[in-house]
Length: 570
Image 1 (cartoon, rainbow, N blue to C red):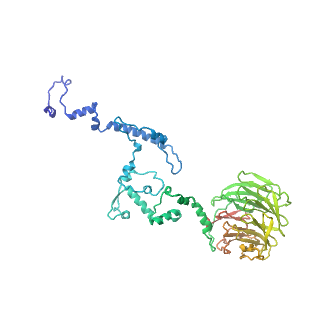
Image 2: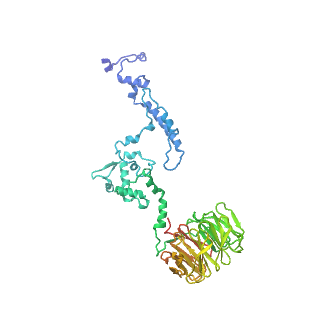
Image 3: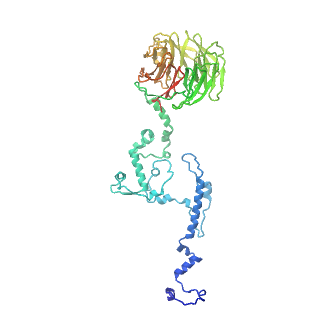
């Protein structure tokens, strides 16, 4: 290399010629600087310049993408759990058919959205780690992850409470992701999942694996047989309540709630309380000519609707087993049909073919086909629930006091003032069994359990006889009750069984606080309830809810007390 390029030469020039003279000898650094400032066609300048211009363009593109992302976040589309919205609105088939852009040298560009950053981050991790461990046992991925957790370093020896997270004795430093994972594992050991929240298939898998650490498979990995546990979960709870749990005979777990009709109390005595067969709705009919419907929740019990009849004081009201209609009757020759769905009310003038002046008492068969009305001179009037037409009579020797149906609606049991109990075959219109109630006293009420196993009769003396199935044996002409209950001293007005026939309630309206609950299997009365402080007053109506989680008690003051039976509460 020439000496002129390695050393600087001082050239004397005049002030007049200073602007015309340009140094001709420059080193390599000066050339590079000049080319950088004034431009050069040589592509090597990009390697020395560090891609400043391309970085500026990429920053502008990134800012544009961030602005676009902010506009998209202004709208949120909730399409339910497990739904993932595609970032591109074009169909997948169209994207696959599109050609990828290429540079002039023929190399394909890799889209930033298609770069698998997780693959680069997981290169140093164990490839056999299951996907559910990354999601910490949850079905869906975390909604947000902190990227700084991977760069965070935690010392397990810095505090005594962190030493339990070590896998080896000399282990010290772990990253943030591993630290979080070990914290979650430690929490699962201290507070394991309760058995009631564990599916039977998961318990079986845990026993087969022999592992104490609760790691459950994703729901998508369950086979069809195990997946039925999810579909039958509610069914299993109900079956457990109905079949596998026996009600204790020495204690009734009961709790009082707000009055069922607190939003609209009655102005007169309650004649009927009944629950809707398919909904959490209670009906209360009272002597103030009004039938009220309430949504029962135990806290507010809001009123749904009330219907006032100008020419009828309801003495009896009942839901049809379908839940679509309410039949209302009183001491008149006509009765009303209230359609729950449409809200319309139809008046049936009277039962054609009969001359009764009062239809104050009736009962609808569980099958929904028949309505039995109390008639005159020992007659029980059968009416079709579909056409509301008279279809036949059942004749007793003395006046009818009470009647009740078998669970299938095939038989009707009635009792008269002469203490004679009749079993009627409704289809054949004939009496198939008759016996005299033990004691031979004027009877006032009869009740049949939903499982057709227990039969109870009540008399004017307050005595209740409880029979079992032996009473229906053909050769048993003088059956004896397996339990006689004499706790009350006034006329029995109500006898009701709950849905699984483990409880029976009976009451009298002549004296205050006359109500008792019986454990039917043993025939014993619960001593812990009601107590002297229970505000029952004069009980005029009572009933159990379809699942026996509620007990409604109506009194002569127009109130409907609501109690919860905790044994049946789900």
